[in-house]
View 1 (cartoon, rainbow, N blue to C red):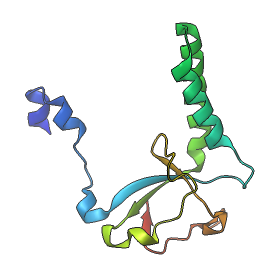
View 2: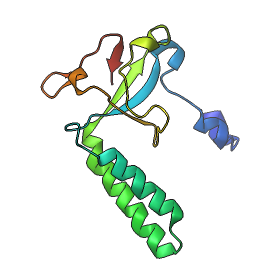
View 3: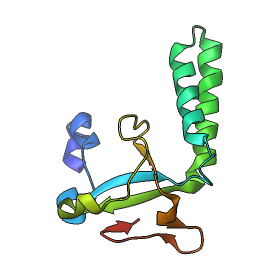
Length: 127
């Protein structure tokens, strides 16, 4: 890592992973909704697209701030999950398989999560 910094190889440095996926599994983020009517993730995506489509600098900045605020608001409900390669079929199901923005998955079945005990961890580990 230090050699990359000294040699200015920042692209290589950006790919560095402290925890190797081959040993500890691939990492995913899951957003846990309050209930099935919770549309925070959809609101985040709408803000992101508004930011992309904004025409003026001021409008882009306004939406970027809104995206940051929404992410901060949602961060309390985002879990880091590691799934081992040989157990990917046991990973929690998510409701946005074709629209995974910000590398966030939305937990499909709220029965997999208990607000007192956390995620049912059959086959994956919580970070």
